[in-house]
Image 1: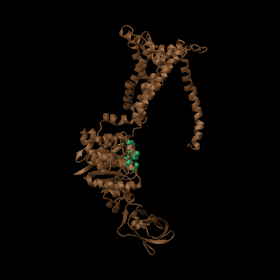
Image 2: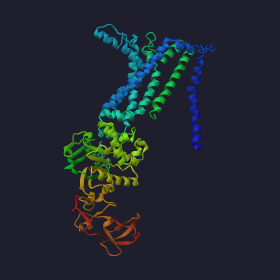
Image 3: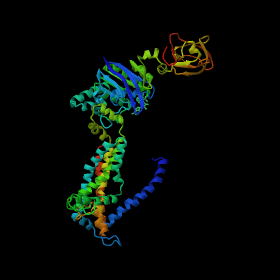
Image 4: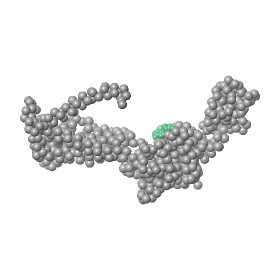
Length: 291
Length: 332
Ligand SMILES: Nc1ncnc2c1ncn2[C@@H]1O[C@H](COP(=O)(O)OP(=O)(O)OP(=O)(O)O)[C@@H](O)[C@H]1O
Ligand SMILES: [Mg+2]
């Protein structure tokens, strides 16, 4: 049984949380699910019920396949390149010195920058006509290069910008975790004859495993939601080769006034996130102890 | 040959000098205790020995070999930390065997050594557990086990018992003493608890503000403290120390006598005073006696003593058990 205090707490704090959760999470999801069965521009009555048609179209749309593949690539890059990079940097600069503080600031700064501003800055850098790239090619006296318009390089560029922007965030999580590792454990390992590299491998990394798992989770969810970097950089181009799932939703759902279709994409994305989150919890967290 | 030699060791942290000039030799197989008040530099001296801190100046030798510039792992020492410093993600077996694994020993040999250490410390049934699932005393044993398997030349302990409750502390003290006897290894033990120091040590080094006040056996320190500081630090309750006319009459700046070395009489006595307060511990009774020309004197009597507050009694320091110190605090 709950004692009085607990009951009061529940009555006091649960309703606001529940109401907010319902208004901002449950209700939109239910709505979107409903829309996804209609052909609907976003204005006027929902009249044109089309059943599973939106989903069928989605399943057959090669650009959607490409955008899923791109999102998968972003997830993989986040896990296999971004997190290890962040961990390496964190291990190098986690100790409290003034030089390290300066480095931390530099690496963390991109994360604070607004996404759209990031996109604009980098699109200026990569601009083959007027940007930094243009100045370089002119100085070298070679033909202009349009990296963002090149199908082979456009997405690679997006990946680079995303790593640049977000690795500092993960680095900060790791730094906080590393600073919490008891100092005498490291000294014990030193006396036990572990080399600095082995101390990292056998002591530091296991002791911050919870932070790494948490970080990886944020990285996966974040990668699935990438959107506002892509729009200013490539707007999904060239020839729709650089869409993520969300930018695909935005472009083919909202911009083209196909809200019913966009909702179907949203439902797929939602399911994808849920499945990922639960399987991550199942395989990475439950197996290896608590988060 | 000495197990350890500290030759003019100096240690500064930035502008702060913690150990100005330490010279000390520690014999093979001894159980040496560094004792002193908080902040006097005991841990620093131990950490210098371990190689966890660099000396500012001076030379440190272990087994005759200069190890001043050697890494911690190459000095042949093992250390037991106050916090135990067990690796929380490893099983006890892995904790104890970690140093051996780092040294590249074959798995079978590691297992054999870990098992025999666990046997000694009664940890065998717990080897598959992780440190989080152990009691404080068991963790302490694991920390000791981790030191034992390395077969070090010197064991270093930094207040290993201070996180344990009183009963467990007494038990572990006995176990440590037995361990020392069995292994015959050189052990250095840091504590600020003078009871631990007296019971464990065969040699005590008393430190005060980074300076060695006195080195000797527990009984030497107790019976012949060479400085005022040692006189006040060793022994509980503290030695009665006072200056003034009575001290001057004895030809000293400060005069000292331990509570257990004062004889009490109804009548007569060298000093007469009024019992202000009586502390009964069962085994002992401590009388707090106000003597007009001296001040408060504490007297130890056995538990059956019937004196009570308000009575006036005579006190006589036992001949041959008094201590005299000059103005600089050195024994006369
Ligand atoms: N890394 C350090 N940087 C600066 N000062 C330090 C450092 N380590 C210790 N000190 C100083 O050195 C002095 C001695 O410290 P130490 O830890 O050796 O004391 P201790 O005798 O072990 O005391 P305790 O009984 O409280 O453990 C203290 O004044 C402390 O502030
Ligand atoms: Mg200390």
